[in-house]
Image 1 (tube, one colour):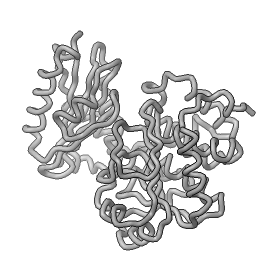
Image 2 (cartoon, one colour):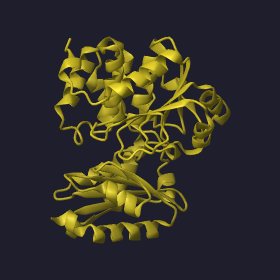
Image 3 (cartoon, helix red, strand yellow):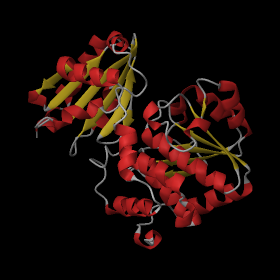
Image 4 (cartoon, rainbow, N blue to C red):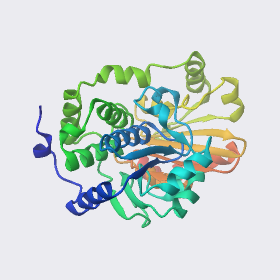
Length: 349
């Protein structure tokens, strides 16, 4: 087995590790939280930490604001997750009775949606484990490293630093690999650091089948999802050649026409980046009339997180960001065009 603790660069501070160690030792009830509309990294990192804390003999629950996509339902203990949207009473009770809240894959309490009020009222200590920049000052312990490829990578580092590689069980390894894989587009971006592959090697030593995990996540499409993606690329893709950019829009009516389920549009925003010279891709999805979810992706050094913050009430990473608008689709498209004009020089240089 690889001795990764020697080979990996140490990025979590000794003070943070000691603070978490003391909280784990002194507490009995723990809750792991992640952001609204949880993705593979949010779910993977949360379930990985859940299994680790459970294996310490502690009481632990995962609370998510709302449901995750069906293609993540195979993850170990995914069926034990509490969804605030479906059972706010039980989820609130778990949060209020917790000694420690582990806040994963978000940098502001508002990102947990309707569960935010319970988090703010809870007397529990808050531990942040996240890779988004500029975390707010509402956490007792902050493990915040934007250079990490995913929060799942940070959970691996936290677990092994606290308890050694033997603490990464098969279940923990499956969850961590899923989070790392999904947050890097199957290691197509934000994954150039060698530490990432050292961690993958260690996870493979735990017996995970990375090819099966890939199939579980990416090869489980329904017929309606395949038709929706085909329709989006054929009918709704617009290329802005002079800006090296592309846009896909889907209205609420169009989503309903294809019986779109949660997660059915996952990955759609990445597809235009396969077009030669396209550096910036935007996907506008009308979740309901008057509410537009915004997904942004870029390549190289184009800062789509700056675009998200300036034009779409959002943020994120340089190459993967998102936001939200409360307006019509036409107004959202107009805002996208304004962003292209503002960032034209960065897009074409």
